[in-house]
Image (cartoon, rainbow, N blue to C red; front, side, top):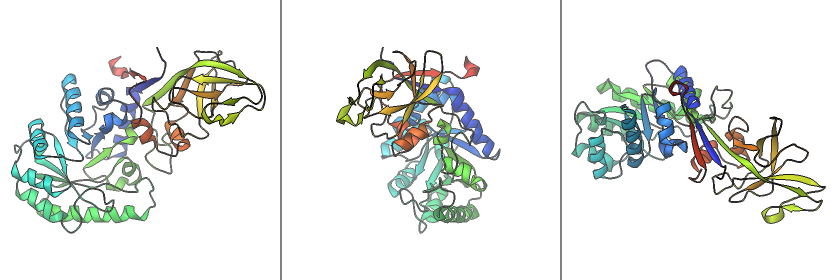
Length: 376
């Protein structure tokens, strides 16, 4: 069997959720974001480890139904929120039937909600009303957010005012304070005629950078999976653990002569006799082709772990690494990201962010779940 493997660590997921809960007030609820198949970790692996969250957030109906299926298998119930809302009136009726919470960010969604009301005691009767405070992606603007809230509240809905930071990873960016002030002003205005209106302002970056503005709900995403949400601190410094290890093995070893070149484009050339290893993973598995200066961790025959540089270009199914002078054999374990190197390091070498590397993994690698210790 080909050795490319994605290992999901449920204990790390549970640990990261607790780190987030420790950052918030006891009255603040945590919506665990499991969109995009739990950021590539797999909903079936992530949801059981995140059951201490107060609810789950997804992007769309198919993802909500997938989470609902996992919860049914666990014989548990938790609120599920569609953060992009529904895309048709039929989906709105499905949301009512399934009792999903929904974001409303545009007029069609508002009209569907006013046309068909869920039961008064259902979670779907609470609307997450999206306010565009400055990201200019989704939501009603300052000129009409209060009016939209009044329409919903007069129809019998409860409202959670929500928005999304554009620059929360950079605590000093001036737009953050603009968004905070706009959000707080609108929330106070709505609470003046509907005191039970709640607020949800902070994503993962906001949870760490703006602790005074957590309001009633925070939405934890990337931090749950152990990648850094803010610019000024590493994930490790924040106490977050990698929830995923991407690994493979050495599938071949070659002795090069001086002048031999390696891989497509002959981008790397040996300047002396050289030993290289071939690793059984590539961009067909989701490892980025465009990495520059990246290394992997390889364990030698004595159990010592070495940081070994990638040589030349990553191919679809494999790439080469520098193992010159090391006691490494065919079959030696290779960690692409995990504890070391961290996914954020590899993302930097690829000119991207950890989010993308998690989400771009394909279905080709083997998958393994390290179960929660409490379930072992």
